[in-house]
Image (cartoon, rainbow, N blue to C red):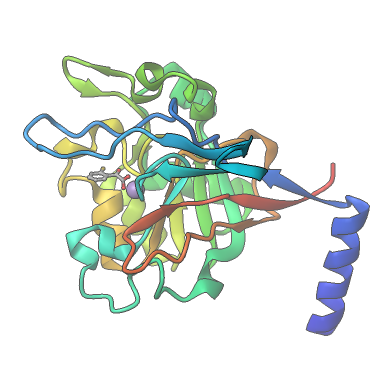
Length: 263
Ligand code: 23J
Ligand code: MN
């Protein structure tokens, strides 16, 4: 098949519903959970604000529109390489400069929802990933890898989403070795359903925040607060995770879309 024929059949499959578009995005609004940095940092991302300009009134008789307060790293979002110090020298490591073809790619969905339900501090290791590959097939160069934990079911409550106590946040994520293993396979990026790409306990790892540290070092991307991964197959879907073209942006909210074969 030529690439023109491939795309023509994809177009037909989208129109017929044979290929479905699954929305892997949470709703952005005042209740969207926001990462809480340790108190030694003075500044943090503010909560989302949506301010009305007009809604068919004296300020806009024919039109409704709003303006927003919105962080780059808020809600379902993309981490660009420049977000982390290890990625600072990648000239294309910003949301407006990255190679956009990279962000549309096949996605591997690693289902560790049972493990995360049993243990909020669940850590994914290379052994978990290799066992997953033995069952579902190898992770290939250029692909996305996302971990399903069903954490999106907590997204209506910041407390339950962040899941913090006096010892800090408790949420699942990768070990440093797991991130290095995925990068050795040449992935484009790693995504989770939690507030960030790293585990809640990642501040105490070596290095701290290994997903951020290693992904961005290698000019790869992160995805956080992904939703509806329970509606995706382990393999066979295509993920479109495109950041806004923010000038020198370090990240961006996204509308994460998965193309999924029906049934
Ligand atoms: C800033 C500082 C630390 C972290 C993060 C942001 C994120 O998780 C993020 O949204 O990229 S860990
Ligand atoms: Mn981020």
